[in-house]
Length: 316
Image 1 (cartoon, rainbow, N blue to C red):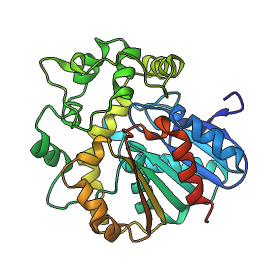
Image 2: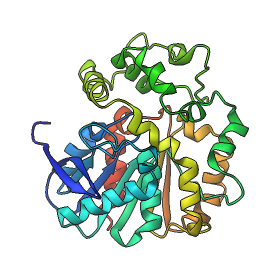
Image 3: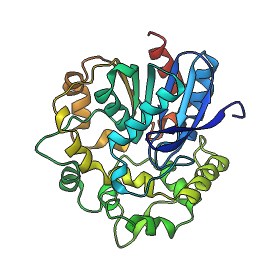
Image 4: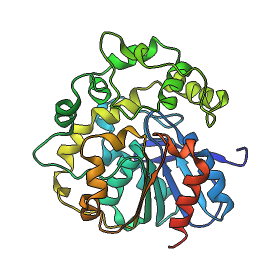
C-alpha cells in the first residue's frame, strides 16, 4: 500500500485527490457510496503489478477531494466533467473504466457523454438504467418501495446527516459495509439508522484498520457530498433528456453478486438476462453473476474481481 502515490489535481474548478500506482495503459476506478479511492486498494495493487497505470480518485464531495456546498454541484455532468479534466491534466487520451455503485452510474454516464475517451468498461453492481422519459427516478423509487426507501430518505438536506451523526461513524461504516441482505434498504423515520443491524463480527474481508480509514475520512468530510449525488437524481434526469434512447457504444463487461440489493430491484434481473441490457448496451460482451456475494464485491472477493477485470481489459 505504501507504493501507492497520492496527489492533488485541479480539475473543473475543484481540487481532486487521486491515488495512483503503476505505468502502462490507464485504468480509472470510480468508487460508490459511502466509499473512497480506498475501496479499490486490491485492484490498484493487482493491476499495477501486471503493467497498468491505475488511477483511483476520491470523487467530488468525498475524502480529500473538494466538496462544493451547493447540492446542484453534484450532477452527473459535474462528476464526468471532473474526470475528463483529471484525464486531461494527467495527459491521458483514453482509459479503461471500472465503476462500482455510484461509480458505476457515473461510468455509464461517462460512456454516454464521452465514449471517445473510453477503451472499455468493466462495471460492478449497477446495470445500465436507460432514461425513462415518462418517469422521474425518485417517483419510480417511491412507487416501488415507499418513503422509507433509503434513496427517498436521503433527499431532505441535513435530515439523514443528523441521524448519521447520532451513531459512531466507525459503527455506521460497519453496518453499511457488512450488509448482506438483498432486500431494499429502508430507514424508518421513527427508528432511523439505529435500526440498521449491527454485525456481531466483521466479515473476513474487512479489517478494523479498513473501517477506521473510512471513518476518519467521513468524520473529517461528513456525508453531505456523497448524499448530494442522490439529491441530484431527478436533476440528472432533466439534464440528460437529450440522451434518451442513446446506446452505450463501448465494449462492456458487467459483474454483480447474487446477494446484491441492486440485483433484486424488481425488473433488474429480467432486464439484465432477457435482452434489454444487450439492446441498450450493444457491445456488452459478458455478464458475470458471483454466487453468494453481496454489494461490495470488489472488496469481498478481490481475487475473483481482479481476475475478471484483467481477463477483459487485456483483450484491448
